[in-house]
Length: 248
Image 1 (cartoon, rainbow, N blue to C red):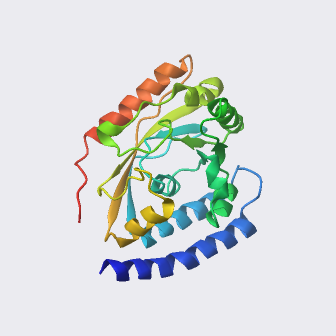
Image 2: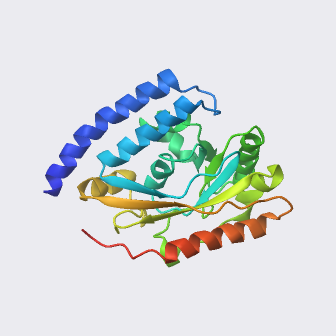
C-alpha cells in the first residue's frame, strides 16, 4: 500500500508545486513583505493544501497575536514551516541553504524568508537586525530559536536569547508556538536528506500536527534572556503535556 500511496501523492504534489511557482511569480512581489490580506490568504491556502497532499493535517489551538509579533516555535521538521504558514502572517527565518533548494527556492524567496547563515559569526545578529527592521515597520516574523531540528519533547534545546533582540528592541510582542506531531516519522533528524525524509512522509497514512498558539509575551522593559526563558518554558510545558507520538 505504501508504494502506491507515495506514487499517488507525488503525482498530486507536483502540479500543486507548479501552481505555487506560478502564483509566486505572478502574485508575490520580489521584495519582502508587507503582504496584502489577499496575498497572506493565498500563502495560507497553498500551504494547507500542500500539507494535506503529503498526508499532514494541522490542528490549530489558539489565535495569532495581533500587530507586530515575533512568533517563536520549537523546531521538529521542515514541515514546521508549512504548518506555521497555514495560520500566521509572518516572514519565516530560515537557513541560507534554502535559497539553493531546487524549484522550492522560488517559493521560499518570494515568501519573504529572512535567511540566516548557520555557523557564521554574525549570523544571529544579522537575522535579528532584519527581523527588527520588519517588526518596526509593522510586519511580523517567525523564528525557531533552538537553531536546529530535534525530536521534540525532552529533546528540545534551549532558545537562543540573541534571536529575541528584535522584539525587545522594537517593543513587539513575542508569541510562543508549540508544535506537536503524533507520528515518529515527522522529526527531520539523524542526517536524513530532504528527499529521504519526504519519501518516508509520503508513505505514512496520516500525520497530525497540533499547532498551539500560546499566550503572547509583552517585551517592554524586559531583557532578551528573560523573554527567551519565558517563551521556552511555555513551549516546553505545552509539549510535555501532549500524548507521546505513535505509529499508525
